[in-house]
Figure 1 (cartoon, rainbow, N blue to C red):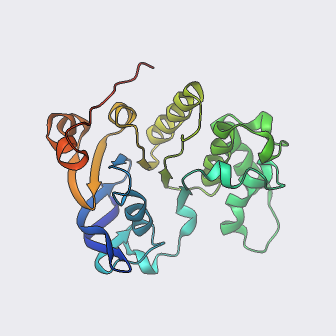
Figure 2: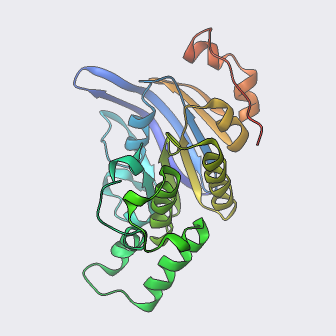
Length: 246
């Protein structure tokens, strides 16, 4: 299988405060990776390093086989930041306009073609928000807004979805529907990297788990993660996994 992300001995610090230390791992094409760790453990920092938003102090990262610092095919990445829906909830734009932004990497300053409009419609249809096309973001629930941003990534023809706690503040029913959508997209071949604080959700959904607390404590399948002493080592002795009924 093709390696989508290769992290090789990466270290990063904010000023003199270490956030990620000597992390090495690989994300393969079609993988659904759950990235977990305690609050302040460096999860978001590692994700931003993977996407080239931050530059490592040492070590190297490749994205789709290219050095991340020279990677230019940004349309291949769909990034949904933590609490994206809240931060954009007052933008005076409609759902269709948000999703259409996903085509900008393809059209540049040109005008939308019929193929672009079809891509936008198909993306909204895939995530189940076609009926919301004319609604403004500030009229949507948190789960609906997150779906709009996922549709924007799909409209750009993203091969990789990177999501930072996308279901924070979303009710349980909408959260389950949202993760079902991620399962379907992953089944269609899209690589997914998900930061999620709920370990029970992660172990139910993903193919691989990476647990970080500055350093990488575990990288493997959910079964080996649950059977290891990683929770105690990375989180402390009071941690436990709560399984969810879906």
